[in-house]
Amino acid sequence: MAGNILVGAEEVPFSGETLNKLNEIVIEAAKSQLAGRRVLEIEGPYGLGRKAIPGSDRIIGEGVEIDNIRAEMLTSPMIPLTAIQSRFTIPIRDVATFEEEGVEFGATEAVSAAIALARQEDNVIFFGAKEAGVEGITTMKGLENYRISDWGEIGKSADDIIAAVDVLDKARFPGPYTMALAPVRYNLLFRRFMQGNLSEFDLLREVVSGGIVKAPALKEGGVLLAKGKQFASIALGQDMMMIFEGPEGAFYRFALVESLALRIRYPGAIVVLK
Image (cartoon, rainbow, N blue to C red; front, side):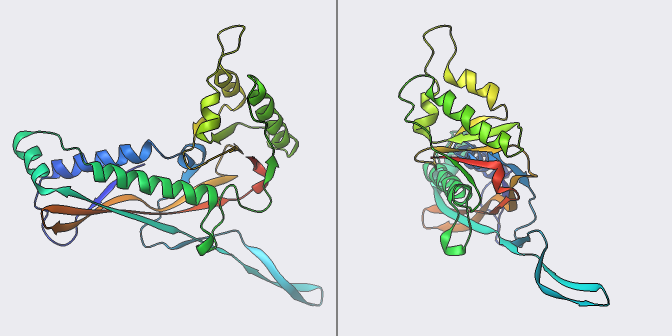
């Protein structure tokens, strides 16, 4: 994630060092939450003004044939780029204290705004946005599903994930794989087997070599994916950008803005763990 800073038309009443420090804070806060970007590759960014990206051409209609020559119509469905925004303020006195005395400011609202933006991003990636007609990793048609057990017994998680990997293997996706799990499932992987010093996570990362990540947006289950943007990716219009909006009483107001779309080319390369 590469943060950008847009300061607006009026002169910024504080130093570039302050802006950069604040930008660093919001980027690190967002990174601590994001899971979709860790299991999917990134395409773009294509620019703030891009509102949609084209899908693959497909033939529509019956076509017309004359003297064994056929004319067909092709169209490319457009995938909307969903814009996400959040706002926060920083006390003017905190900024002055940082610039005059070098005392770090807490930026609690900035951290909360970055976390909220990141959670909303992962909601779009994993669940889509029904109001915009956007589908997510767990809701798109054509996905494989695998029902996992409760993982109450040590070793059951490995049994389930290996079985889910076998589903992708049979669908001609031999790996490598990436996986995102709900926190309640992810945390169970750190139990250790009675014999040896291996955890379930140690065992599974040999099977899911592309990475296993905790996804706070998921309340249960997870997703297993064949790794590579040829199967699925995140298309960025605008990566997270911090905008200085101006003073507001005893505070400075900022906005965080980004836009993105989930791009699934092969739904069969994804197994939803339910």
